[in-house]
Amino acid sequence: PETIHLVDKLLDFEQADLAAAKKLRREIRSVRTATLWGMLIELVIADTKKHIKVLKFLRARLAERGVVEADAVSYPHL
Image (cartoon, rainbow, N blue to C red; front, side, top):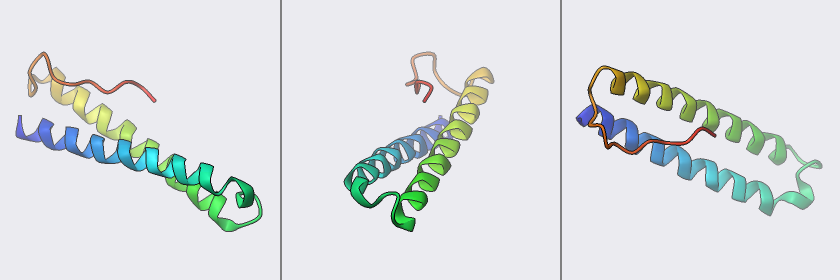
């Protein structure tokens, strides 16, 4: 339970980071292709999605091993 709680917290952080990066991408729309910032934000988004995918995989494996309760929160696929 402590392990799964930590994974859930990490997922929450990553989801919040993803939302913030997408918001930032919208805010710099006018200069996105003219500066390096657009590319950097896209890389952050891709990296964050990768982190979420890894954490979801870990959470699913923990669930298979009975580490979590049946009613634990699940995260939808991106």
